[in-house]
Length: 412
Picture (spheres, rainbow, N blue to C red):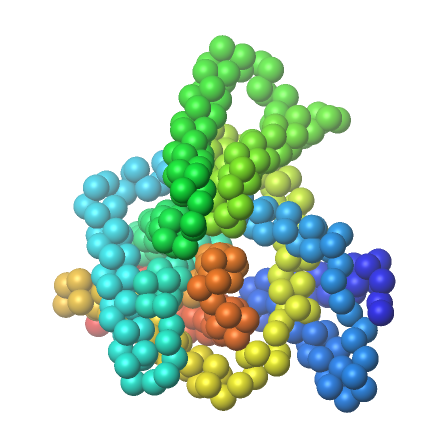
């Protein structure tokens, strides 16, 4: 059996190569990392099928680093939230963004129920509706920045809608997980603890924000060191780690991956609200996360991919069905709520919002933890996230050029 250090060598080598190999494409690096991990996992799966020898096994150290990567992924997802930008868009656009999400959720729920009736899928409709309604703020931000839309109305709308969908989906996933735990637990103390920790996380979020604002008001000189490029102790990074693991430690008092995800997500949101003008701190935290921990998480997902459970006809046939359901559920609300002169613009928005890479994978992790998903369904959601993350940015760019969209409007 290959030892842990060789597995880590494989992982960090793939993490180095993927951005280099994909730099001329529009494919997100994390997609390449998952696929590269799958290639390694498939190789060892074939070897096992042919020889009966298992050359990879359980690696606690690698799994721990991957788990930290997952926490960093959710933290950086929260860090990407721009509450000032959301507030500047006004209540009308905020309400529209929330309405888009609610309609997406309802359509996805109905279509999953229809899929269950037409086939023997037996998918948990409420859970799949939430997961399919997620978007990927990271993918949206990347596309918007690359196309220089971030200061234009169309880009602003895309970012606000993605932020609202991210936050709403994150809260719903947590509430769903607590509800499942409440219904499945025979221990009356556990549900009470879960609800209490959920409330404690929200309270801790408010406390961190209030204390941070107080400190910035009374000790601006001290806090300036947190953002200095010449600080040898990297106090800003250390303070951020305290906030991250403060939230995660509170969340871990109950054995619930959903609460851990929410805690890490809110940690990022808290730092975004407090230090929204510190680009340097954000770059350092992104360097730690995307430079080391997060690639380990994505690549190990691929290496540990359950090919035996996923490569079954009854599972594979669901992939195109879920792609269609996700696309319809995301695009239809944008088209239905569009004035006639903006149909093509909103159609393009719905296409880009269809990709749900980060939170879809987080949802898959939560679903497996709750036993709502078996290994085949978990792998199916990973494949779905990969497919959508590849297709949607390419299709959005094509529609943008074809429709000649400009500042949220359309050319005749």
